[in-house]
Amino acid sequence: MSDLAKSYSHQKYAFCIIDTVYSIALLLVFLGSGLSLCLENFLKSLGLSNYLLIAAYLLLISSIFYLLNLPLNFYTSFTLEHKFNLSKQRPKAWVADQLKSGILAYIISLILILSFYWTLGKFNQWWLVISVFWIVFSVVLAKLAPVLIIPLFFKSKKLEDEVLRQRIFNLASKMQVKVMDVFEIDFSKKTLKGNAAFTGMGRTKRVLLADTLKDKYTLDEVEVILAHEFAHYRLGHMVKLIGVNSLVTLGLFYLIFKTSVYTLGVFKLDSLLQLSSLPLIFIYFILFGIIMQPLEAYVSRRFEKDADLLALKVTGAKEAFISLMEKLAAQNLADRSPHPIIKFFFFTHPPIDERIKIASSYFI
Image (cartoon, rainbow, N blue to C red; front, side, top):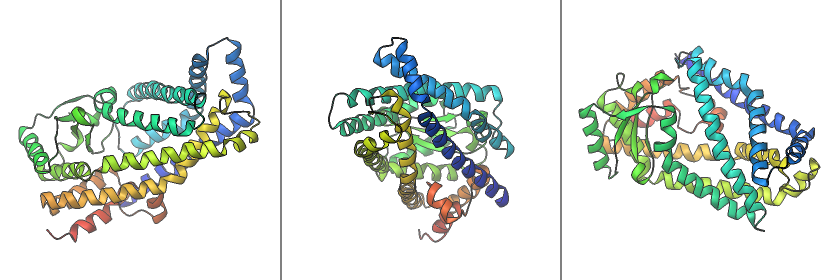
């Protein structure tokens, strides 16, 4: 099982790197060849208004890039998961999910890009204004995700197991966390991996339990995993992550603000207001994301470790925590002890072996 998990992890991260390099190469070709400018001129010849011009341009380049990336996307999100027996999703369902994901991504991207161009033409310090808007938008999206986005991909129902349901509410009360309700979602239609989450904000806060957990985990194990999720809330990790992501957003747009005059010249573009410069913005996002990924992963690992420790303190269920980690590692084909470089760049949680070691030495 360890060799299988290593093989799965190595392939997954290798294809992640390939996808990133491929995406940057496509954007560079699109910019450097003049295709982006040709597309902008063609759309302008149709007499579209500014906002319709942006919407049409985004739709066309999104469709082109999706089609060029389709073989790699299909292999990593469908073939690879079936190859390692982690999914039983049918091709038709995969296509339906891709369609829904594409429409949703287009709508969200259009809102953000329209706000970017509107701000760009209105304010001298546009980088600050657009950063604030994007930050607020992301918070609103996080609040609405449990009721608007997740239901697009998973069906859910209120948890019928009254014993488990009551234990979850008792645990939430013990940890001073307000839970609106507990739902079971049909993960098994798409993946055989196990997961649980405490999502939403305010009135949308809810516990989501994957049905893949139901028959394989004891009540103590489910309680421990939810204690971990509640611990994130008690420790203020969501607010802290919003703060970290806000600083990253500010840093990104300030970098674009200060350096775009030079990078535009490389591709013989005059201004960021020029629609054909949009792929350059995408390159900034990808490269800045690569630079910031190790830092964001480190912060996340620290939060996950703190949540583990609080979950152990509250539940006192050391053995249940260890057995939970063992089962999750097997079920999700997790790399229990990754190479330090892989951990540095990709791991948002401490590796399973580290989490078990910490729990084993934890004094209750």
